[in-house]
Length: 272
Image (cartoon, rainbow, N blue to C red; front, side):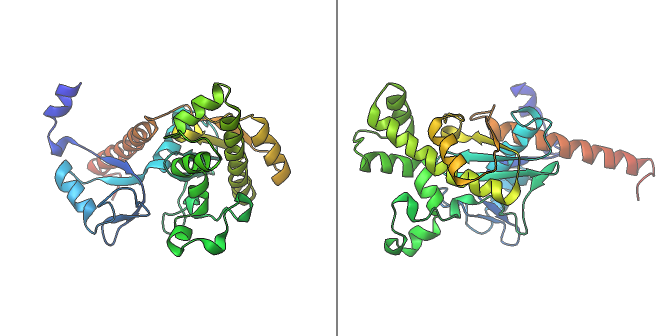
């Protein structure tokens, strides 16, 4: 209960898992690749978090934790290989390969928002500022701000967020529907890239935008067939806004069980 949780002292907390955007820089105790969260990239921010919480914490990327949730309890339960594609305000990828999370050499595996989309999107790379190129053309095209910008450029003038665009398309607005078709075709390019590189077998679509996309839409399926002969299964994530919390709880329970087991084995002399 909440009352019992409030009564816990820090010495009884076995592990604390915090999820958020970006990748941990352990040397400077800060997070990188998280431009939307002011202060998140400041040196020592992890120390400040630990001081505030009152115990040592383990940080993990939010998309990685959502991937853990889908693996343990969601759409990818029981699968050794899958990719979790998060599409919301940003775009991220969780890679679950051979039964565990794949993080890469520096923990940055899955930062697909930095992938170039190419000239096929109608954006001329030669006229993009260097800062814009570094933000990643994938994210600029299929992240929330990019979709709204594209909708307005296409003539859907009064759209302020992606939900409004979804509502218009589902309500029969032909122009909004064509915009969504183009978004799905752009998504197909990213999926084709992921499938060619890691062959995950299953792509789980999550995030506020990803969970609202139709996995068997004609535009998405046709574009995928045009882009690649590989045919991944597409599924909608079972967890929505709570995905990161569920993943954090799952990870924390695994950490706690391992910690308790190790401590008990050491106590009876079976571990040195």
